[in-house]
Length: 340
Image (cartoon, rainbow, N blue to C red):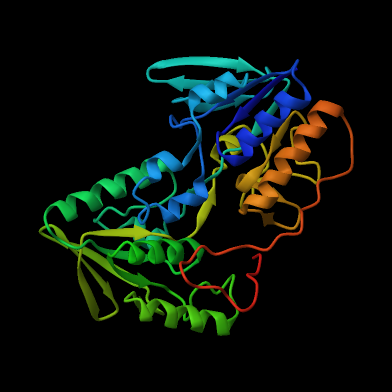
């Protein structure tokens, strides 16, 4: 059987590795625009306080994946799915090629979500969504330090990722201002009491937190950046990081006529509206509009789908019991995090 997987994150690579174990006769090919191999995406938000993160974050190099028997085609962009022909078309530089499939698995992941008002601002916003993003930010940080300055960051978004990044930058010794549009931090995951404890935790560690802060202007003055919230100005930042949530990558599926909502819609068997195409990971929208963006359910989906593809029918996928975690240095909520 010809299996084509689009995406080399935890969903795609876990599935590919499991298929190699369960069905060694299958031909498993992975298409990805990444060039670093398989890396630990959860480590991105802790990529500033660790000096050797570039070495630790890569779990499998491209060479290691290929040595496992996975046909990795990296540095490419999948441009379309031709469902009637059962093939995917991809581009590498100026060249275009295609791959046939018996089953196609979309493990595309998600992009950082930038709210429309922020998209219109002139100053570029950084995100922490890929290894390349982290490399760019670490390089910027090193350049500031080489001038004998302490890096000053503005982070827009006080959800899970924004708080994790703010925590790590503060631990690394940088100056951080965290802007959040709502009246408490991590309101989707924490109780009100734990949100208040987290606010105190940050302020005790020198992180400036500005709540109910709808950013309406970001301007640049020389090499420094100013942010305005209402009539109040906050300034002298070296860079701005947007951490406003995520947006599942649905464009490829939608262009092929596959039903999408917030994510790529799948049934309880992780099948899209095309029975030859599955979606897993944080691009997949389960019945009820649920998108699982946490490691335990994503790995569970990959293991379950490998069983289905290699051994045939079985019961529907059910999410495992799991407790979301926040990787905030020195902070443990009194009540376990909610799954939104």
